[in-house]
Length: 165
Image (cartoon, rainbow, N blue to C red; front, side):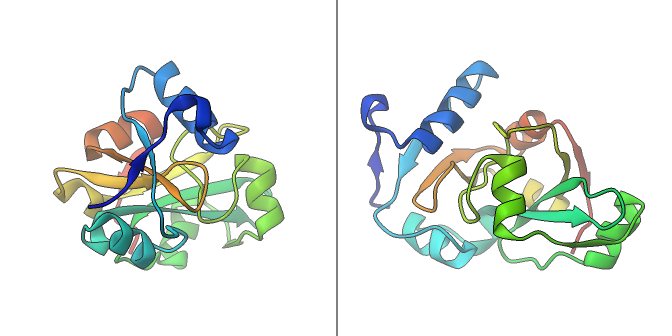
């Protein structure tokens, strides 16, 4: 695993926002920069040197009627079952576009973390992430991540764990 740990004074503002959110919530997980893109789960796994399943990918959806943002944190190896998600949300959903994601989370696609968003989101965590000792989540940019335990993910996202694949 070859990655560079940021010194806080050199951190990208979006990554710094994630690091600050982690610290504010009492987590000591350091945000790290990777030389290669982590925009997709496969890219992140290659850059980190872990299994694709250990990547906690953040996918934002939009509820069709209410327009509310829905965040799904799924195992990188899994595809979200949109019909199952619609059942959980209680209304039809659709994939969110880049502008919607940025507006509601404050982050770009490929860098959406599990915390530190512009507003409180409805969040669902893929139960398959709980089978690992450690997982990796986006940290504000397509080149930054942080390592965490699944129990930390559940705590920081303040949400429910579901079968979403």
